[in-house]
Length: 305
Image (cartoon, rainbow, N blue to C red):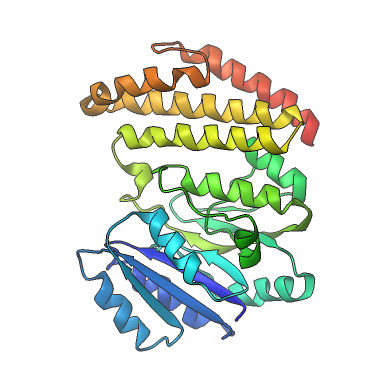
């Protein structure tokens, strides 16, 4: 089997049918869909089983509610395809997905194929602009914007490097995984400059939830990536880039917390806890750090362009 599509599902009865139906428009049949129900309490399971009656390639895995990382890992462990793709249950693929992806996989045998997506809420296409090492470096600078569902990768790469989603991270767990995946596949990473997934940006997604201590697990995820690069790379670019990412993340959390007055007091200790990562303590003025960020980008931009 060529491709396994892993779809974590939790209380998505209103959207999952459209996600699953988007695969019926494909002129290709060497794939499987693994729908992992993460203990839904609505009618999600019924919708999936009804779709299975029409789409025999759907495999359904049921588990107790353990979160999206656990659901994705469960799907990954049970996948049979040579290539893996993750897709959220409120997004869907375009009708020409296989028409464009399959030739690249079969003819070039690339380990990772990254492609673009259409961001429906912002009415724009987000497409990759580079390949290989340059693509990774531009991603670390925020100049490229891959998502967990904007690439396919060989299952053998996940297995070789024991790559799984870290369940300790409620946020940035996807970034933590695909940055390592891209780095470990640099010589075999290919990009397609066209969108093949429609991203709906659901208001119920984690990114739209009120700030809490879980939001700060993104700090742990980025710190783990910094340690990863310290282990594998001598090039100072990666250390500087990761420090830049951590500063931006810390400031972003601080701004969210100040806007969310109802929850600010409950996370004040988190800012103190993670201040060691960037050697600053709240409260602070934002402007100097924006300037700091600009300097980082100017220095790094010359190195990768």
